[in-house]
Each structure stands twice: as structure tokens, then as C-alpha cells.
Amino acid sequence: MRHDRLRKEAERIITELKNKQTDDLSQSDKTVHELQVYQIELELQNEELKRSSEELDKSNKRFTDLFEHAPVGYFLLSESFSILNVNLSATIMLNLAKGNIIGKSFTKFIHPDFQDEFYFLTNKVLASDELLTEEIKIQTGQGEGFYVQLQCIRDFDVPSAARRIRLVMIDISERKRIEKKLKRFRTALDSTADNIFLIDYDTTLFIDVNDSVSRNLGYSRNEFLSMKPVDINPKFSDEFIRELRETHLNEMEKNVTLEMDYYRKDGTLLNVEVYLKATQIDDEKIIVAVARDISERKKNQDRLAQYAKELEELNTGKDKFLSIISHDLRGPFLGLKGYTQMLIEEYDLLEKEEILDYLGKVHESSKDLYTLVDNLLKWSRLELGKIPFEPMSFNLHDELESVMKLLTGIAAKKEIKLHNQIQKDLYPFADRLMLISIIQNLVGNAIKFTKKNGWVKVSSSLNGNIITINVEDTGVGMSEEIKDKLFTLDKGHTSRGTSGEKGTGFGLIIAREMVKKMGGDITVESEPMKGTKFTFTLQKSDYQPAIQ
Image (cartoon, rainbow, N blue to C red; front, side):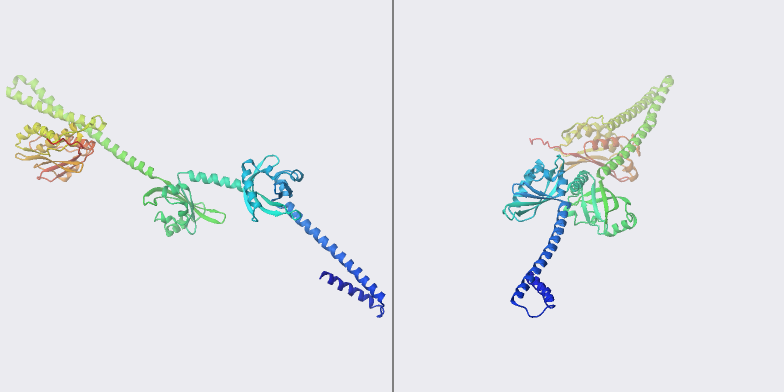
């Protein structure tokens, strides 16, 4: 087609020249005409070839400039990895002149740790027509290392049909540096004990969480990506977050701190203090939530509150203790002092009966004083943990029988009957001396506050491994107000028995402490003029005697 076009153009030019001559042409003229046409056709061809050559040179220069100054390194490798050609960017990346690169093996510039990756990549490239990529570390001519991404594809040399590799090398050092920095940051976030959430400002969906969140709440990171804060705390509804955005988080960098509970996947609660802050990363608005586990802090606060309460009770006990020492001890001592002084000063004037009466009163005062001091010592030793706790197994019925015999004389004076209704085969695991002291105190009180012809009964029941002991009487009973004061030192209450017997107010407090020491509890039921029932519990012993 190109030939036809040139032919027509030459014919047109000749025709224009011939029109100026005669129309009659000889055969020789026709030959000359053909030669002239051919000459002009050749001239036109030369002009067109010249233009095409110039265009080709320009295009080649543009391609060469693009090849040489591309932002990536281009390599042409032989099948044995010998470098056949490189662009200028490749020489800059390797910090070597082109002459020092061409002919060298590409493997010379690969870091030793990545040689295997390169061989594996190129073997796959030479066996397929796919474009394959790999990230490896390259060394410059001076031995400096940097990370690159290799993009490789197989090529063929047309004359020889030899396999070659076209390779593009992209410097990813900056990306690797940023990735390393992000990895460090991510590692730090995942290593912290705090629970960190990233929340979409508009949708309130979780964008990301750190490892602590997954560890502490039981959900995987992928599970969180389809969840919202409301899924771990109903309070975090869309309306609540919208309100937070309008009040506390309506400006970037503003923050708010809340204290709440998070629900774990298993339904248990995690006490947390949540710090919320709105921020913006490029064009993305997010809410950063940092939730700190305050369960231990809560426990410590509860412990501190308990310690404060115990300290207050100790101070109250100390004040009561000092009050008793200053008041209750003073009475018996004044009685002793008064009676002995009268005996000394009026001994010669007193009758024998009067002396005996005074001595009886001295004896009673001495007994009261001894009881008070003994109770004070017991209480203080219990408070200080000085009384040894030695639990053992023993027959409760037999021990109570011994206590009853000791108290029979006191009960007989008031014509009160004592009943031991403890099961005969009952074996508690308890401190024997403490238990005797508890029963003596409770039965002694029952006798004190029971009128003549009444009764005091001690009974038992067994429920599993718990033994329940009941001490009942037909005494005067007590009001709710008095019941509230029985076991507290700060409200200590003392009253005289039905025959004027005195008390210190310490007996029941000591009994309660001993029961608690043995892992039990003590309660009281009573109404005025309807008697009283004290109940306390003990652990049952595993020991059971053989049946005879």
C-alpha cells in the first residue's frame, strides 16, 4: 500500500510536467517517463525514511531517558544470573558505575541471609510466565544493606532463544523502617496490661484492639472487629456515645474518664477505669479508649475500708478496755480497801459475826476482781493472738457433763435444773479448752438470769459436717436493744442476775471470739420474760469411735 501511494504521487508529479509538453509521446519517451517516476518515487521514499528515522531516534531517546531515570532499578539477567544490562537508577541504588555492574553475578549483591529466597524465586520465574515478587535484602558495592522488592518475569533472547530474567528492584527501606517502627509500637501496645480499643467516631464499631483486650475479655481480635462497646457494657449504647461526643468528646484531643464494668465473654465482670479521647488520623476520626483493670484496686479499697473499720473497733475496744480498768476495777478495789480499813480500825470493837460478815464481803470483792482481771486477760490474749489454738476430736457429751457438775452447786442454790441433751456419740473438731470456756460462760449466764425452779438445757443437732449447740433457759429474757449490745465492746452491757449476781460484760464477747476462732458463728434468740436461747456452731470431726 505504501508503494502504491508513492507511485501515485510520482505519477501526479510527472503528469503535471507533461501537461506542459505535447500529448504525442514516443516509446522512448514512455521509458523516460517510467524512469522519472521511479526516481521521484525513490526520492519520496528517502524523505519518508528520514522522517521515520528521526521519529525513531526521538522515541528511542525518550525510552532511554525513561529507562535510565525511572525511580526503580531495572536489570536484565542471564539464566545464570549474570547482569547483562542495568539502568542508571540501579547504579545509584548499588552505588557503583555501570561498568562495575555489567557482567557481575546478581547474587553478589544479595545479602547472605537472603540467597536461598533469591534462588527459589528465580527458579520459579524461569519455569513460568508469571510476574513474581519477593522482598529481600541487597548490599551495595560498599557493603551497606537495604531492603528491596524484586519483581521478576522470564524473557527470551530472540537470536539465541536463551532464557533471561527481567528484574525490577524497588527500594522499600523506608517502608521497612516504618513497618519496624509500627511493629515496635504494636509490640509495646500488646505488651501493656492496659486494654486499648480504637473505635470509629461515627459508627462506634471497634477498629482495633490490643492483645490485653483479647486476654482479659476472652474475645479474639477478629471478633472485636464486628462488635461495638455496647457488646461489652450495655451502658455504652449508641445514644450514650453520641451524648459523650456532644459533651466531652465534641472536640479533638478532649477526654473523659469513667469507672464501669466490662462483661467478659464468659459473662464474668471486669472492673475498669476507662479513659476516652477523641483524635484524628489524617481524615479519619477515632475514639481511643484505654481501660485499666481496677479489680485489685477495688479489693484494696475494700480491704482498706475493712482495716479502717477494724481499727475503729480496736480503738473502741481500747477505749472500753481503759474504761473498764478505770471504772470496773476501781469498784472492787475500793470495796476491798473500805472493808479491810474498817477491819483494821474497828477490829477491837467488832463482834465475831461482824468480822466474818466483812471478811465475806472482802472475799466476794476479791472473787469479782479476779473474774474481771481473768476475763480482761483472756480478751486481750485473744485479741493479740496469744492464746494457742489446738483443735482436736473429743466426746462433746462427756465434756459437757464435767462442766455441768462444776455448775451444779451454783444452780442448786437457785433450785435450777441442768439438762445435758448432747448426743452421746457426737465428736466435734475444736479446741477443747475454748469450748469448755464457751459452755461455762453460756450456762453460767443462763443460771444467773433464770429464776428459782427454772431450768437450763444444752442440746445439739447435726447437719452434714456442722454441729449446732443450743443453750436454752427459762430466764427473764432480754429486749432487742439489749441483744444488740451483747457482742460489741463499744456497746458493752452488764446487768445483775435474778439473785443480784454481778457481771463484767466480757464473757459473751470472749465466747464470740472463741467461736469465731474455731470457724463457727454464734447467735441469740430472746424475748423479755420468755427465756433466752444461744446457738453456736462447730465443725464435726472425721473421727468416729468404734462401736463396742
